[in-house]
Image (cartoon, rainbow, N blue to C red; front, side):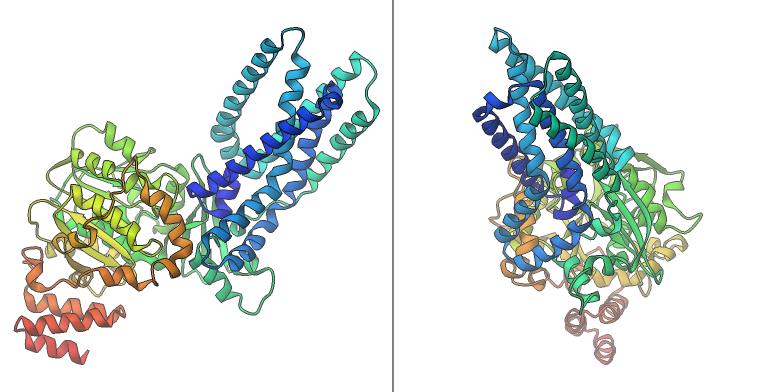
Length: 595
């Protein structure tokens, strides 16, 4: 159920707590009702009826699954930017699916404990608790490690209700052997056992591409509404029908979906309904690998945290990285990334690459030796668990694993967090890494922080190497010198933004709890999409110091201004022209004005 609603509601701490809250409410309600009516329920036939009821109610809810994405779209449209309204209606949707079987779960335990008691009630309850605890542990391990990866979420749901039906049948047989059965309870159990398999067998399978639409994100909802304007129903199916399914895998840690639009122009990788990589978002992925790779020593031992599409890994290798460890938690992402690579050019096939299927922090804690370059490109901090890669404690761990003078790059998504959340993450980063360079990309909504204690030159020669050219083309850059367009300044200009902000730490998970609300309330809380990018500086040639010393002022201004204008960042391009004029590059400034 957590995996099911993670697709619909998003994999935040709130979606997990919502499912858990309804689950526990059902258990409490069922236990209370069973205690009140124990005189009628204290028999094997009653226990069989309860287990059969669990199977029947679970089978009935399978019919709801395919309609959940469309219904949830209506919920988010009604909630607007009110997070509390959205969360409240999400709880109602969760309750509609799981409250009845959970209530029956709650009733089973006291009934079973009553049946086990024979003189010593305390011993009976102890045995019941022991069996329940062992079963819970076994079920969690079996579902997480065996059933979901092999049968999927819906298949595991079916296996669980089949188990309840089997238990009901066995208990009913045992009850028949002990004496006459209470007629009504026996009939109810038999009827449920007959109907449940039929319901489960005839239930329609959900469509992974629709379940992964991710309309809990305002951006995804706006896209669905935009491409289905004029329709009153079936909007999720119509919108996602524009994409072709390439891969769907329900792995150990998440559900991975890869699609390509019907025109073949855009491949998208979604994890738990969240688009984490696409062909239309290549600039950030390329810069996250190319810039730190070119700043680090050639041949540096490298760690890349997070695979995604694999484009960042490819850019790091093209920029001259040495032996490279890739840390990726979900194996299905590795398979999904291959759809973004041309045959024979997959960075995973590079002999320098060693894939480690584990959490990035675990890799850092247990790695041998140090790294000259570390690139962290996790998903958004509002996702449960991802916050661990944006905390002060994580950055200290990175610092401990960096060689003296090493380079560390951190990708921070600006488009779904508020200024307060951003400042808490930025403050944690700058506390550990006070020196470096900042770059922005993708409509200035992605920030790439490249930390390096000692001054380092961004090598134009390495950016001009033949193996880098494919990465530049994927990012639609005019040339290697166009990278200068996305530089916004040194860390010295960022410290004022983080001053006084509470730091995001392991023990104070500000981003993990605030960012999910930011995503929904963004228009009202953050003041619109341009607020965070408006907070960032416009770096000048004088600020650049030795970073672009290989480029020369005239070439730097020319490439910077033209790429900014080509990318549609006209205000930044005008600033570049004004900066050129202030530095005496009047001819260059005039050409940029004309452009």
